[in-house]
Image (cartoon, rainbow, N blue to C red; front, side):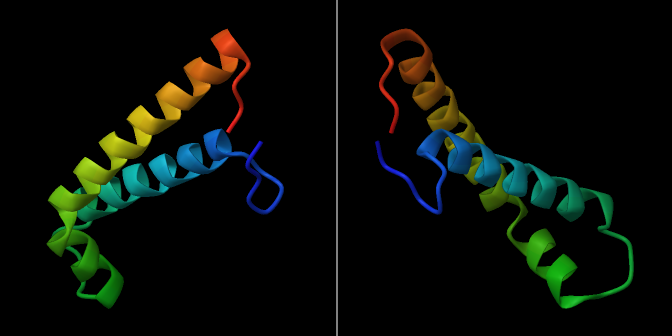
Length: 74
């Protein structure tokens, strides 16, 4: 079992999925607000955040299915 800071890859892929979903929300929601470096970065990389969220969600899904059905825990 591969552990990073005491957590397996299912946990970390879920965390990164949540981070990218949050960045998608922030990139869309605050598109007309005051300029800040973080919001400008999120707006500029909005499409990349969508694709990264999808990729990490699929990784999370596959790892969770492998763990649940076959007991393979990465």
